[in-house]
Image 1: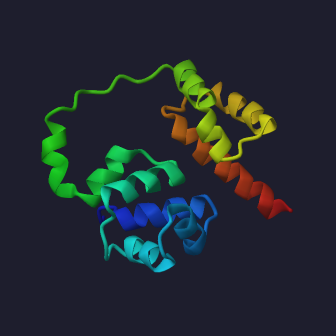
Image 2: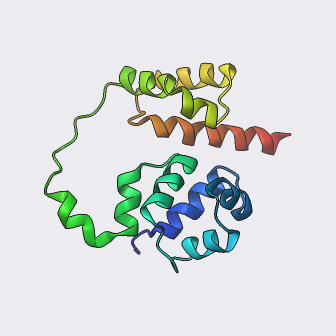
Amino acid sequence: MRKKTLGQVLKNQRAVLGLTQRELARKLDVKPSHVAYLENDRRRPSLALLSRIADVLGLEKEPLFLLAHPEASSLLKSRREPAERAAPDQVWRDFTGNKALLARHNVKPRELKVLSQVNLLGKITAPRHFLFILNAIRQAVEAEE
């Protein structure tokens, strides 16, 4: 089993969000060829670009940084402590309270209502997981149309 790479993560998340390389490049203010280089692991993004990528694709910055710079993992591991699981209600409050995230992903009130039902399952551990679920629902609806 191969380790996942930064390029694979970028390509997969871009596909989940239904973006082309050209559309992602426009959002990141880079050339489409640069996105292709990143997805093929032929370039490493700058820290500023890595931050923009995380914001646009709705990904966590630290794991992306570690994929781009695996040599830094030993530095970061020493400061890590076992993470406590956030309460499901806290994860939902974090998600719904992030107005910028909701606006960036154009989350409608009707979609929030569906996601609130998903939250009742109690299995969501991070706010970004709601975006993943929402995008899966959106793609399924589009396929039905």
